[in-house]
Length: 177
Image (cartoon, one colour):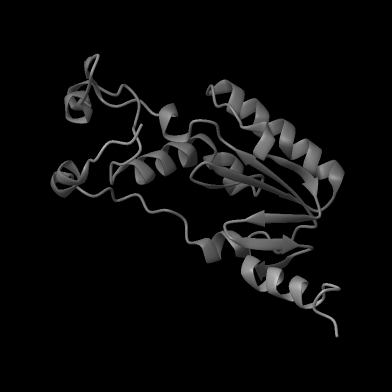
């Protein structure tokens, strides 16, 4: 469901909690050799809308008028609120270098598979405690190469995803003359 919140967004006070800078996130991955990525299921819907604010999220469909109990997509404040929520849950683990969060995407960098498994266990325990669920079809476990935030990360090297795709296509048998 897609709701047009443009008029409401003009009235909302912009959230002060920033999204992490992609460059900073990528920099923290450069010392690892093994990576796991986790994708949170139903991202924004993990966060409750304050009861006094639910009326502002209301929408009308043929069956009646409804309000969101969880943070909906389309509100200009949703990304910041969600990032604050995820960051607060994983704050201690982020400080220890166990996990990095960017909205509904988590990365667990490790020097080897053993450390990667230990870190995964810790992240899953915290996620379970807070009722977070993952889209396992989109998760990657203990990989040497991952795609994250539009970049390819491999053995501590960060490549722009489009650059890597271009290099691969240059080397394909169809391109050789």
